[in-house]
Each structure stands twice: as C-alpha cells, then as structure tokens.
Length: 335
Image (cartoon, rainbow, N blue to C red; front, side, top):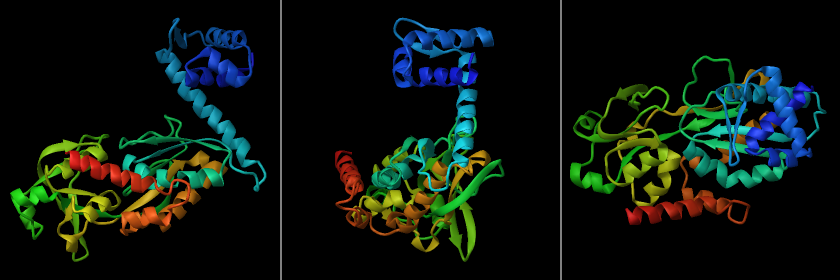
C-alpha cells in the first residue's frame, strides 16, 4: 500500500466531501478511491469517515488524521518546491489568513493583480478576527497586527497600522464631544473583546511621546470588526478603530474624529509563517507582494479612500473598493 498516495486520496475525499468528486479530480476510478480508504482504515485500525447515502463526515480520529496528513503533504510540497530552479514560477495551493476588514478593503481590491502575476497559485483566503493556529490548521501564512508574542513562527514586518478615535454625529448630539482624554470617563464606547482570551481591549493614546492606556465604559462589546463599525455608525458610542476602515465614513461625515492630537499608537503589521515554510516560493511571493501593496496603499497611510479607488480605476478589481464604499453608504441610509 502506497501510504503517501493514501494520504493524498484521503485529504482529497475530505476536501471534496465526496468519493466520486475526489476520484474525478485525481483521475482514478471511484472503486479505487473506495478501496484505498478502506485499506487505510484497516492499516490504522480506526474508522476515519462516517458514510451515508447523503453525506460524509469525519470521525474524531479522522479529523486528527486529516490535520496531520495536510501538514505532512504540505511539508513534502514545500521541500520539493525549495529544490526547484530559482526561476520557476510559484505554484500550488497557498492558504492564508487575514483580518476580515483588511482583506475586504485592502487585499481583495488588488487580488486580480496578484493572480495575474502568479497565475499558477491557487489562493485559499481565510478572513476573520479569530487568531488561527497556523501549524495545527495547516495555514501557510497569516497577517497579524500588533506586537507578536514569542513563538516558533517567523515574522516579517510589511507595514504600519494606524488607528483613529471617532463616533457618529448622532452620538455627539446626545453626549457631546470629548476635548481631553480625561473627559472620556464621562463618555461611553463600543468595546472590542479578543476572540482568543475574551478580554476587552483597552484604548491607547500617544501623549508627549508616551503611550497612555484608557479603559472605556460601554454598553455593548463585540469581537467582529464589521459589527464594531456598524455599532459606531448607529451611534452606540465612541470607537477606536483602524483608520483604513473609518476613512470612507470620515469623508462622508457618517463618522467624526475626536482627539486627533492624541492619536492611537501605530502598530506593526506583519506576515507570519511557520519556520519550515521560509523557503517556499509561494509564501515568498505572497510576502513580497503584500509588502509592496501596503507600501503604496493610500488607505494604510490615511489618504482618501476614493483616491484609492480612482488610482486603480480601469484595472482588474479597481472599482471594488468604490463599490464597497457605496454599499456601506447605502447601509448607513437604511440604518
């Protein structure tokens, strides 16, 4: 029994959620795929899949074995890729994870450009605010914001993350506008809590070169960036959010900045990846591209969101952000 082939067949069956689709994608008869899985289960002496006439599902052992197989197959692919000629084009499946708002507003509008540059790369993009375990979840690389804890991951800084303190005009009409950091004690905020720890994240301001942390009172807390923005637009309270998210609404007047002289401290933005991925051409291609993207992206530096759209008008994906801004403004009018 070819164990390496069995791993490939098993992961393809799980990914396709079908013996037939897996067989078609591998160019094998369905009976062969079925026999390989049965032989694999006999070899391991565990049941990997629950089968019914309608669907497949992983057993607990199957889920654990799937994660190990994905990691092993990825290691084999990376090892082979590292020995290819330097001029070879990156190819294969690249799984990345990015914060949802960053992916939606910055990466996705330029994704066609990345595909044009690397047409043989298949991107699998996870977007969310939950930190993923790159090794356990077989993610090739991820974008992380803030100071990184010590870990076995390799990090490369690709940009700087700027924040802004703001609220909707309707909030200021009811509660007034704070003029000093001390006055924040009399205001309420929309709080953001970590999906990993459940801890509410304190605000910070740079005062005379020193970072001052402030714990805000609030009536609602969320752990999703889009929900955070929606609460701000509805006037629930003050927010401290990424400037690239706030820009369209600051320009439209749906949000108004406060305390600009004491802006939040900038944070580093990094691509992180497991140490055994550092020679991978596909990971290196993404890291280099995203570094260029953030270096030239006006949203990351605070320029107009509409300027960003117009800069790429006529290019693939060039109108994506303008469309998103229009959709957000429409949502605000409905709210």
